Length: 521
Image (cartoon, rainbow, N blue to C red; front, side, top):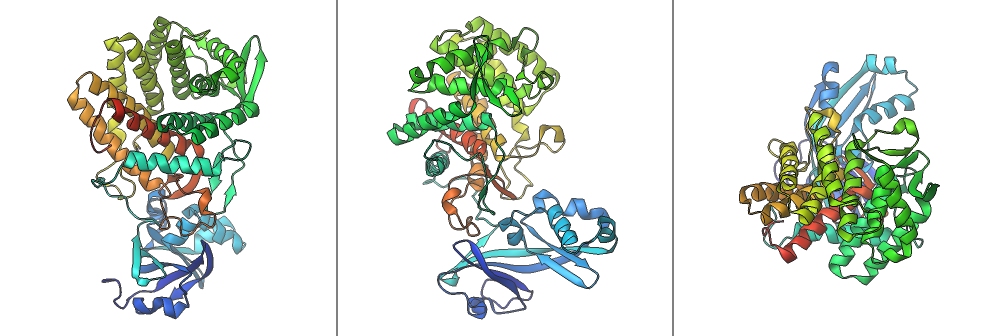
């Protein structure tokens, strides 16, 4: 294309937006870019989204899934031709509507009432590159180049930048701004639609309660602490049930999970208003204890029975972390430290037989708590063993610039797709592993953990809605500002993505007060 302001040599797509809402969009052939705002009638109150097309190529049928993969969404444009009709979808348009390639194909087919076989037999597909720009009231003089509909976060922070603090402050503002009068937070939100999703998950809601309460304590912020307490009360009122036999559980339509009971109990345990929820804590503690298993470490469901064993990698660690913290505080029903360590070892043996990254962050946090209470070196070594195994799963070299720092192993699809919540959870465990390595004088390991955390913070800040340049297509900006996208190519907001990231950032900020571990994290 050349430099901005030079005559373009390819078609340009534009979308005029006001307060995030698309007012007019279309294609223009070969205008001078400086004249574009005037040509399309954009006034000073509008934001203009621009894609300047570059290279284009046809995509043969045997390459469709490889070319139109998730990683390409928001980077390349899609051209669908059927008989005499052609539709071109630019990268920013797909980002703004959170449109997957497969859904774009399906939408094209259904709008024309074509059968799947007929469409596949006669369609012609193409892909094209496009430079992306955002124009505000300064026109091209103030144009901002985007990558996948956002501005890029640099690989390394500047000297003035504090990514942990910036991440935490943004998430906390989002939580406070989205807390309902009754104390609830939205579980999932669709920014492109401006709608709250109907799905729900109690564990992820309690994660947010815990993270917000911890950050409020770190900040000494009474307003934030009050919000966390209201949120805890809301979640307990919504999900807590006495299930009999002196036990309590967190009950959802799909059943009652060990992990939910453990996290709810941990929220109460750490709450300044613990006495207010003494009955719930007593019953939840008994509930978690009732699912302890001499062979497995823990069973994972109160009910239904047929789901018992699911999500063991997550729930066993959540339960063990609650146990470790209950032992630290010496509450009624807390297990002995000996039993906690024995259970950690039992779970570790099972993990080694079928390793899974989901196991690592929760058990690393539990191990760090148990080491602080016992000083047993084998516990610290196990935290290091798990954390070291996780490090190669972080992606960096050879990756799109906005994806660097996430955790994903494409060789093991069973580990799941990359996700903001996963990156945040891994950083939670690694923050504890870093503090442990520093306390034991393991400088080489601490340096490795610190670099991984720094890169992970880059990834999370990239996913965070940070300002006008990544919310230009969102009409209800207050609903998303400070929250995290699921991935760079999926703008859905989930409360656990925010919760894990806030919890990790809070740990890093708290560690600085007692044991500085570096200037970059």
